[in-house]
Image 1 (cartoon, helix red, strand yellow):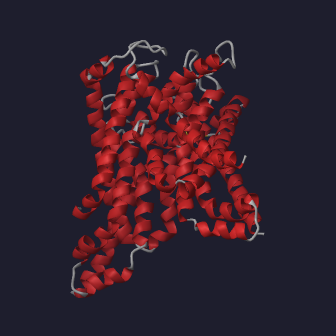
Image 2 (cartoon, helix red, strand yellow; image 1 turned 90 degrees about the vertical axis):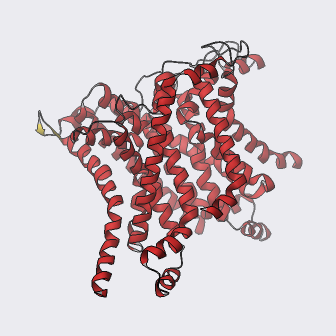
Image 3 (cartoon, rainbow over the protein chains, first blue to last red; image 1 turned 90 degrees about the horizontal axis):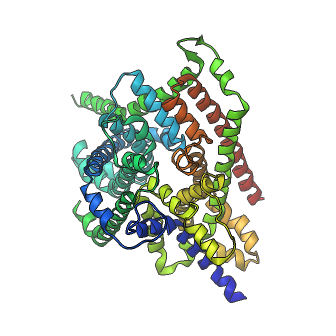
Length: 257
Length: 283
């Protein structure tokens, strides 16, 4: 009995992980399934992968997604670092305010963007997407960078200034290296948020600038599409590879940058 | 000269803060103000509360309370499930710890939409779940699960659980394990240790996770849209219908304001609940 109760927690954890991974496993399995729209296993095929690589729409959408994700990441990091370094203690009182875009349901933000851009008669497209995703990105970037900046000993900056380094040089050689780990994690977070975002993009992308999630939605909401399964399998393999490579070279990478 | 330079530099400091502040004012505050004002002003009617009169119907309240109930249920369930898991990862996992944390984030590289889509394969009439149940012999004819509240709930739970797990895990990570041992050594049982030691020290993570899951489930669009076959039964889908299909902006805006008001007051109630829990644990 005691053995059972000791085993129950690991079993529970295993069950929760199984639940988390169940959809992905099913998706991957069915990306190799012959039947074009069914839930029955009818045989192994790689046809959906071939179709995936031949569908140009997907690659155009991926290109759009990448442009938006990298621009939003760069903008939120630069703006975030700028405000964190300049406001210092003043920011402490209002730092929590910056979380607001995460706490407001995304649909409200999306409707807000739709309203604003049509009110100002701005044409919808990649620029509006970048602007919108930068707001989402800032909601992580400002509080997290601020938290890291707060851990910094202000005497270090004073020392650097006293020893004759200019403000700019101090920023480059003292502040920025200290912020580096936060910059890494914030950058990743913003990138993924933007790359994965559907709802805000759905409302303010316009018809000419379809991103990857918008493409997926357009295909998925009519029913089963094995190409989407193949796409998810590829995404999963690529991200597994990236995570493995990253954890293998992380130490070296952080030394270089 | 030196003083001028210094003054310029300190002004410069505020200048550097401008882009972020501009973004928040222009793309967050301004749209919110526009939405609120659109709900009380329209070109046809001028200033009037007519949109609110159209929104205050039983049908709308049903939708709001259905979403609210589901979101509350989901957030609570996530908290209950996440506590033991976060505890296990932080204290019991040993050398598997890093792998388990990484496995928590890995699914998020695959798009959120695709997660929802994957549940088609599991919950459909001839999907995985029905097949297993039929095989085992628990049921004799396939259950109808798609397009039900159950389907929406299950998917939301799976998709939003990590948003509860990660903040809780971060809290447990900082938690000094010796406190638990001290509590046990001093004669407290599991129940007492949980309520008096563990819960108060991890409450901030639980709170963050709870409000994240609550807010996201309440306004979710994708899950109800895909899982309930396009019938607009939840707040997110109704809002988008007003804006994208019906194009009745002022009614949509009024509906947003009403549901936001209800959500915020619910969050206030929950916050008071958390405060009471923390206070109860102290005495």
